Image (tube, rainbow, N blue to C red):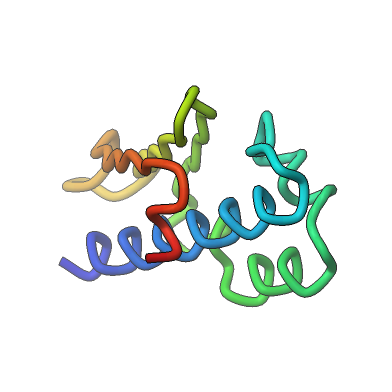
Length: 98
């Protein structure tokens, strides 16, 4: 349950950062690397400070830009019961900031 709660919080925070990127650039980033390099320092610092992409579970975060939104997928990398467990959340344009 702790993993699920932590992962959902990470997804929600990452989605908000992606939406803020879109507000600044009028398009979604093509990758998470572009998100980190193309955001204002306060956003990339927020992602680092909250360990969103580098959480204590060593999860694998994936991002896919869609025509009218994006998808974030998180896959657990370790733990007997968690390894390989995936959580995927789709967002419509602007939904993450509602």
